Amino acid sequence: MASVKVRGLNKRFGQTHVLRGVSVDVPDGSFAVLVGPSGCGKSTLLRLLAGLEEADDGSIALGDRDVTRLEPRDRDIAMVFQSYALYPHLTVRDNLAFGLKLRKTPPAEIEARVKEASEMLGLGPLLDRFPRALSGGQRQRVAMGRAIVRRAQLFLFDEPLSNLDAALRAQVRVDIRKLHDRLGATSVYVTHDQVEAMTLADEIFVLNKGVVEQSGPPLEVFARPRTQFVASFLGSPAMNFFEARMESRDGRWFASQGDLAIEIDAADFPGALSSGRRVTVGVRPHEVDLASGDEGARFQVAIVEALGAESYAHGTVGGAPFVARLDPAAPVAKGDTVRIALQKVHLFDTDTGLSLREA
Image (cartoon, rainbow, N blue to C red; front, side, top):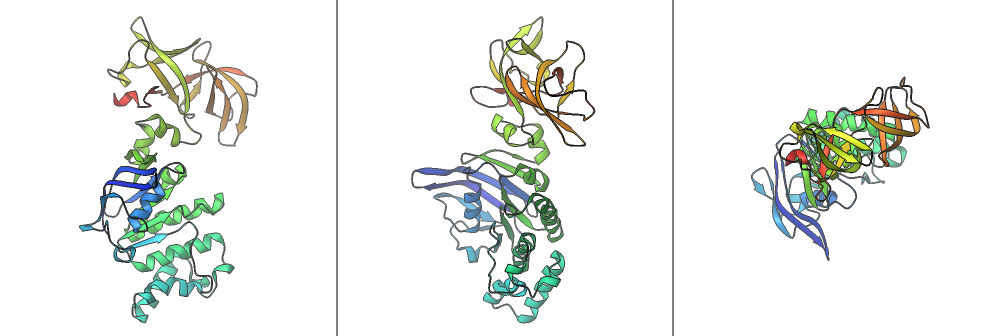
């Protein structure tokens, strides 16, 4: 396996600047996930790693090799596509073996590798079937098996679960992570699904408009987003936001909007608070509790979704849409106005979108 080092990649398609000086480091054996909305550049970056597109400038290294201008066949990578890309006229066995035969691998080794991959992915009973006789999940396992038999330095996954239903996505997601751990592979995985990103990644790279806005271990990025975009993109349901201005009252700080005043612990935002500063307050749905008496913020509840182990109340706080995760036993119903306590508050500069924790 090999590490991946990307430095200053730029890519344009006509007048559209898709990647803007992107740099990425993926250690040997790590599972990196590129995540972001449609059009952010994540799939273009993956195609540049694969050699399916050529960078305008910048460099790509796999281990100690500069592969920036190498053809795909010379990069020693294996890619799993969203569309499976199986040969319909070949059996599962022949699909797995096809690439090895092109490379004139000895027949005995081909047989051994196909057997190893099929056992790893539970494809043994399916080896003599054609793709048309397989389910979506089975086809995706064949696509992964075809990558495994390559024993490549780098595995690339291009939204491989997007064609599967929700339950199957969850199962195949686990299969992919198990496979990565078993192979000790270096993997780069592209998705727009932040749940996939959070659960699969050792390192997550959040892309927006052609730049990496933040990278790091998933839970660290989730807990300390550096921008409002990152905060809004990671988390389901998404973080709640409302605009306010900072006020100082008797040595205490408040983010205020109309009759709403959220007390802010200045120690969490050293040097970043000043009277009159326009801020965007962010609160995750799970960082909310019911408050007693007249304390906390007024939450006007429009609807309650009861999901069994938890409930989500949807409504407004200070006129802005707000979602709170509550205990299903909480005495909250459609049409209620309740008080809520905010356990943790994120502040972002309204003009720049940057977190004030990073100030």
